[in-house]
Image 1 (cartoon, helix red, strand yellow):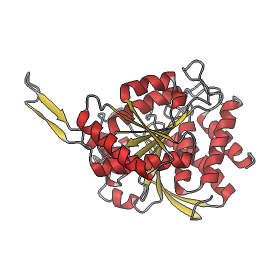
Image 2: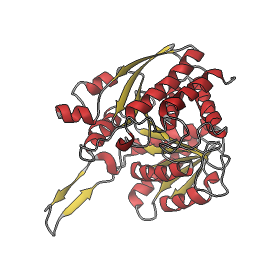
Image 3: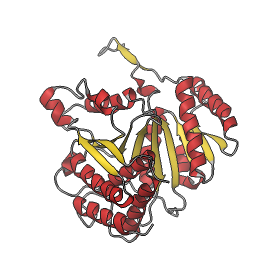
Amino acid sequence: MGGSKKSYKIAVIPGDGIGKEIIDEGLKVVEAVSERYGFRLETEEYDFGGERYLRTGETLPASAIDELRGFDSIYLGAVGHPEVAPGILEKGILLRIRFELDQYINLRPVKLYPGVWHPLRDKGPEHIDYVVVRENTEGAYSGIGGTFKKSTADEVATQLDVNTRKGVERCVRYAFEYSKKRNRKKTLTVVDKANVLTYAGDLWRRTASEVAGDFPDVKLDFAFVDATCMWMVKNPEWFDVLVTNNMFGDIITDLAAMTQGGLGIAAGGNINPSGVSMFEPIHGSAPKYTGKNVACPIATVSAGGMMLETLGEEKAALMIEKAIVKATSEKHVRSLEAGKMGMGTREVGDLLSKFASEIPD
């Protein structure tokens, strides 16, 4: 099933550090499959990031969000600059885009590709293949809180974990639909800490149980977040689709990334199912590797595949995944670590583009 359009407008935000290098390779592969499957990408690049902030004092100009609404998707490299205090760029660019474009789903496929080193003994690609659906605009990241008597012995700091029925329900419903579409185990696991965080936990569990009535063919399960971390290591094959709040999702997806081989291969999507979504590798800007042609671009390439799948270009997205599998399983790319791949960043992009153009459907 192809997409509904023959041309897509893509806002490209390379960002900081290795962002420019990896986004170039991601675009190279995405454009290779667009030629193969007969659609076009119209890209426009934006310089949002640390250098612009240091130069102008602004993270996003006033016009940015309205401009981004005019695109079909956003393709992001990495944000983070050593000369900018932590949090400024993340809040001012990433969180602002997520919140203002209402990208209320953070989608994180967790898939181990053949030939990729990972730390779980006795587990292979057949065991590690699940998806985490993270609520992306509420929770402890909503920015509600403050301090009292700051820098004194009596200082108080609050950070409210905000969960709304609307926010929880639309996230849970998306997760049910995704499990149905995935058509694997058809199991949705709600990850919470309902034995201690009883109010939020009750809202999530009650909502999921009510929405489950609309999805009789999907099994609903519940797991505490600490137990989930254990099972991600011990029995990852138990999972199909997990759904959880913003903070728990942020934490468990980094653990999950290591089980699939590390941040060099992990990609994510910030999704508004009826609006503009943004796709990115989940690793940082790695400034020490900037300009050295040693960073692994596979996570960014994979994010490009997620972008195409969300746009409806499913055949093209699958071909990108096949190219990655061929590169890892046949050991063309020896390692996902920077400087240890056996070839440079650009050469990996060239290889994946070649595979994506030549592998039979």
